[in-house]
Length: 327
Ligand SMILES: Nc1ncnc2c1ncn2[C@@H]1O[C@H](COP(=O)(O)OP(=O)(O)O)[C@@H](O)[C@H]1O
Ligand SMILES: [Mg+2]
Image (cartoon, rainbow, N blue to C red):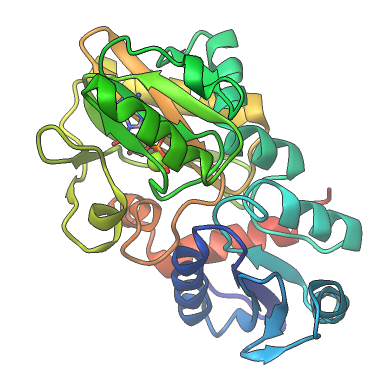
C-alpha cells in the first residue's frame, strides 16, 4: 500500500488488567513493530496490571486515574488508537468507549459489540436468536454453585475471560465443584457447558478499507485426544493448526455465513474471530473474539496471510479503515 499523505500517529495500546495481560503485551509489541513505517508512527501505550497507563515504559501517573489523564493527552495527539488489549477491561468495550468519548478513531469494534461478545452468555443469546447453534449451558454463580449437578462431561468456564484461563474439561463428577471454583476465581458468572464433540474450526472476518468484508480461510485447531485447546498449547507453539482447514463446500459456506451473521448481529468492526465446532449435526459457535490475538503467529494474521494479505497489509487495512470511520 502506498500513499503520499503524512504518516499517521497510531497509539498502540497493550497490556491491561485481565488475565490476558501478557498475551496483550505480545500483540501490541508485534503490531507496533509491524506497522508500515511509510504510513504510520507507532506510539506505545501500556496498561499495567494495576491499571496504571505507561507511555513506553514511563508511568503516566501514580494512580490509574492520574495516569489515565496522561494517556488521554497522548491519545489526543494521535490520529488513531489500536487497542490490542484482550479480555475484560479492554476487549469488552472499555477501550472503545474511552476512544469514543475522546473522539479518537480506533481499530475494532465498538462498546456494544465488545461487551456482547466478551460475555459468553449474551453471545449465545445473539447466536441462537439468529439460528446459529451453541452448546447448551447452565449459568452458575457463587450462590448457586453448590446446586450444580453432574450430568455428563462438561466444559466449565468463566463467562468473560480468555486464553482458556479458568477453563476446565470435566469428565468425572468429583471434578465439577473444583472446576467451578477455579472459574469463579476469574468471574462471578460461570458457564457449565455440554461438551461438544467436534472439530475446532475458527473463521475471521475483516472489514476492508473499501467497506467490503473478507472471510479468511478457516483454521482448524487439533488438540490431543481428551483435552481442550488450553493456555499452554495456545502459546507454547505446540498447537497443531491446519490452514486451510479441510472442509467441504457445505461446511465452508455454513461457517462463513454464521461468522458474517454474527459480525453483523453483534455490530462488529475491523476484524473479529469466530470460533466454532464443526460437528456431524452442523456448526456450533463456541465464542467470538472482537480483539483476537494479533502477533504475526496468531491465528487471524496467519489466516489472512494464507489468503494473500500480509500481516503488515492487514494492519494497514485496520488502521486506515478506522481512520476513515466516523462513529
Ligand atoms: N462446550 C465445549 N465443548 C468442547 N470443548 C470446549 C467447549 N467450550 C470450550 N471448549 C474448549 O476450551 C477451549 C477454551 O474455551 P473458550 O470458550 O474458547 O474460552 P477462551 O475465551 O478462554 O478461549 C476451546 O478452545 C475449546 O478447545
Ligand atoms: Mg477461545
